[in-house]
Each structure stands twice: as structure tokens, then as C-alpha cells.
Image (cartoon, rainbow, N blue to C red; front, top):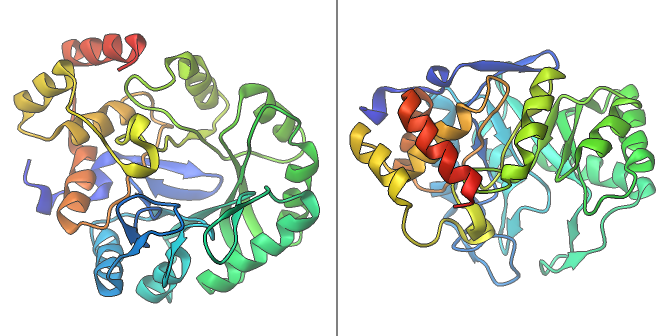
Length: 302
């Protein structure tokens, strides 16, 4: 593949509520810093590099950007980088954010927001992004308890016009069902990838049957999470990568997209070359035998 000539359109499209997006998007968690994300002593990324990557992503046809007000490092905020790079926003650009978690100015984690505190988090995202409404807001959840009160608070903000569509993050099927009884759910954002949460395969399929986008995070990083991908690639992934002349990361993204037309990808990077490769992964078509080998690796837990 010639990465510089492939755009996000090659990945296909999905509609979040009434907002069409290319299935390869961009996650902004890694933008504010170099190295590990979401830590107190993160090293701020060069501002112009971050801005250039965002603008290049849009040039590549990326029209779905994932962010959050708690994505920041000393001197850098993902939301404000997005604002600087992309405002005034194009009509086709969809920005999805998350609420629930919070960090103090030093970067230390605070208790998750209560229903009463969620409006303040929504307003903070609006201010940082320079928007009068948010396209998609995901309620980030910890644990298996009821989401009704908090999701209901966001549904009220949706009715007030501050939010266009609602989603959920880090959730289980019963929480999605509970939320859907309150307001439409357009997406579920959970950790998922080759060898990560094979027990969620049925959940992924069920989301598609319900018209809900499934948006894996850490599809490349896997268990490396905030630190990024660690260790070498599995033999099955390497075999497929060599056959297509691509990287293991691209194979992981392509496998993710093959899980269903409702499955989106939001790989994040601050590196222009990695960005081009991530977008190009949307054009990678895997054969039946290759998918079978990767599926078996997934079921074993990579």
C-alpha cells in the first residue's frame, strides 16, 4: 500500500445517529504529550507538531475525532489543540468527547462526576472546543452499577440542545440496555482488539444488531494501554503483515474493522508517519484464511 495516497474514505462509513463518519477516525489521547498518557509528569508534545498532525488527519479524510477534557499534560490540552488546529470546524467533522472522569490541574485523578457535576464537564468541553453544542458525548463508566441517574442527566442536556447524540464507554450489555430505555445510544466505546476481551465478541455483534457503533480503544496498544504497544508482535500477526507488506499495527486495525460494518477505529498518534499508516489500514482487506488465523489468536487471548 502507498500510505500517502489512501484516505479515510477507504475504510467505509457509518452513521452515528444522523452523523456520517469514516470508519477510521482519530483518537486525541496521545496528542498532549510524548510517552505515557494520563500521568502527572507527562512531557508536553511540541504544540506545532500536534496541530500539524490534526490538520493532516483532516486532509486524509478523517472526520471523526475522539477527545476528552481530561486528556491533558502540563501546557497542553487535547481539546484546545483541536480548537486551534481545526476551528472553524468543517460541517462534516464529528467530535466525540467523554465525561465522567476528572483530573485536577496537576493531573491527579478525582472521583468520577456525579449526575449534578456532569453539566459542568459538558460545559468545560464546550468552552475548550469552542462549540455551542457537542456532537457526541460518551458517559465513561467504572464498574457494573446503574448508569440511569448519570445518563439521565446527559439526556436532559441533550434535550436542552447542548448535546446532539449520546454514547457509553467502558460498559456492559445490561448498562447499554438501561441507557437505551432513557435515550438513544449511538455508540459504545470499550477496550477491544486482537486477544483483548474475546468474551465481548457477542456484545460487539449485538451492538451492530441494535444499530449501535462499537468503537474499540487500545486496538493497537492492547494491554499496553496508556503506554502504547509493548513487546513484539504475535507470529500470526507478523505472517499477515509480511504477506501484505504492512505493519503489525495496521493488521490489528484492519482486523478490528473486519469485526463488522458498525465497528469504528480511533487510533491515536502524534507522529505524521504513524497517522498515514493508521489511515491506510482502512484499505487493508484480509483473506478468509488470514481472518481465521487472527480470530483463533484472538480467542486464545494474545
